[in-house]
Image 1 (cartoon, one colour):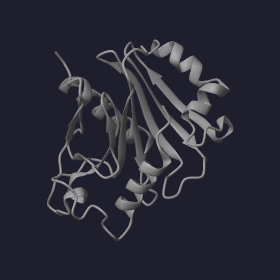
Image 2 (cartoon, helix red, strand yellow):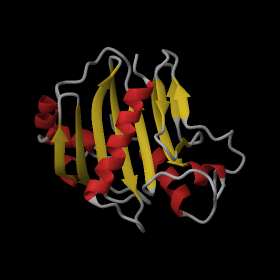
Image 3 (tube, helix red, strand yellow):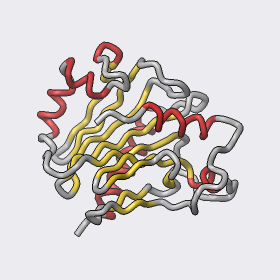
Image 4 (cartoon, helix red, strand yellow):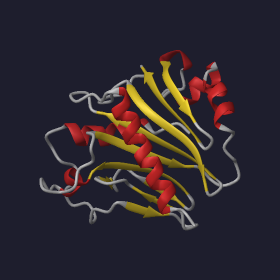
Length: 199
């Protein structure tokens, strides 16, 4: 479940650069519905970057940025933190291991390789992991080469309606996030996804 470098890099460049590549995009929206009815919706202030997101049937990689930036509206809604969120939805059929087992796996070299943008376990340092009965969240440093990306990111892994979901938060180089600030924003997005798909 590795996030595409091209998708994340392009979206972060859009958020940090002077030019706005969202001009002419479709109407700004906070959500995408998959073919099986699962809804991927951004928490308050996060909207879908339709040019960077990809969906195919019931799998998806959806990139979220500031609604204000995507709509080119200085008065538009903004998230509480500056950055970018990606939500990756795997195909049905591969249940998520319990958070404790997942934490143990990610502490190994193969596990760290699965988190690295370039697949190199040696470039990943797991800075902090937190888990409860239904999710694992972590803060990590990934020194893989990737333009416009900060090396620190937050990721959450959890199951949703029989699917494995990964939510990642990337801050901006010029406005880095504090550890708890990142965890709070990540957890808010996870809680929102669970709430909109309840029932």
